[in-house]
Length: 553
Image (cartoon, rainbow, N blue to C red; front, side, top):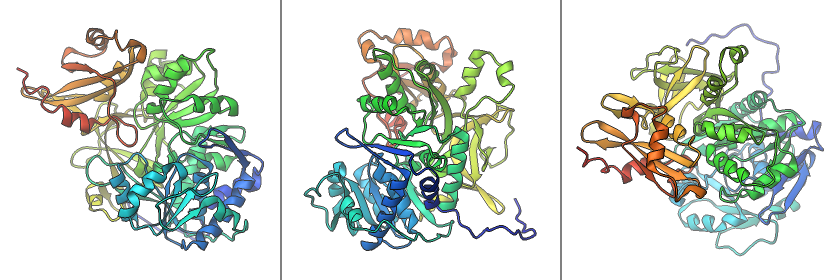
């Protein structure tokens, strides 16, 4: 791709895209619209966009009072709360960088992230003080701010401040500077499968553009009520809550929650009238399981983006019965994360059967404006969009990272193409003639058996379509004859723990897959290990079971 400079425009192109302007817009035009946040004790905190902007202005003054300057990195250890929301705007508003610290990483990795980024100050939710105290001796942060509803608790952390006291002693007026839009507003570190996490630093420009497209793509409106289920400490919490702020939707932050106790989340969904959300199957599958046990059965009107892994059809169909419409979306930490989402293009509903439409909904979808995708072979050659050719999905665009921060792995992660370059996703994919992307598997998770490829994703999702199955994971295990063979792990629903059998699972799989594609064994277990972002930890399973088939004939 070449670059040219055309005739000068007369536009105010120096007017920078800044994150603080998202909240300023909401506070100016939708000042009364509510922001709801669940506290640790289960109570609910309520305020509105007008009040939120005043608190963020106080926060900006407070940050400067404790020595935070332009370009400084400010770490955050927190759940999905109104304070985390305020920090996104307050930190970036003064020109500093918010560091999203993934609570699911190992403490050593969290410490690495803090040190590699050079975090100067760390904000800590009161419930996470033990984690902060554990890593404090090994990190270089100078100060800590505890976010609590009560008095500042006793802690071993050095140089500690109280969030609310800082705000109470600060002016609610702040002259926010215009920040160069190419400056970093926030950073997130990938939970990579090998080596230390890799740093992605998002610009103000990239995230403002991403937020507008997220709002447009999800069809958010002022009358919507958006619940932030995705952890805000990972990949900007998928950034949809910024889009919701732009259009003046009501926001709901569920605070700390657990998949084994979804009662508080469902209660908030009902009481606050949630109409839009986003999350991963790791939360939606337990949600469906919980809803199916409720009496009386609740009814919602919610559109929900589902990402991280392909949503099982059984999950989508099950949640649809409760009025929750699952929309498959795709992205990554490196892509801010929105790359594409699934919708039925006009005309297709007339030519496809219901079963075919459901199959279409399993695909990752069509790229949004601002993002380009390409399928590439091992040598970087472009592959056809015919729904058959499998290649690595390569991506570039306004909110796609062009490098990793101070990390040599940058050089192996991109394809050069003149002025611009492509980020290599590591995902094996096809793109059909209608432009729909289908992730076949991660390249490292594709199973090569006797020279043929087997998709672990397809096996997993069909297993999860069995009425007795809660979760399923399939990995390729070394085999003395076939190079690799599939090994399946199945977690049954609690009520079927004692009755599920391998035989019925095999009978189920035989309806869809050829004999050579079937797993050589199915292990029924109580739990499948997961990564820091809630995906199945296939690397751990491969390591644990690497010799499982080696005695096979």
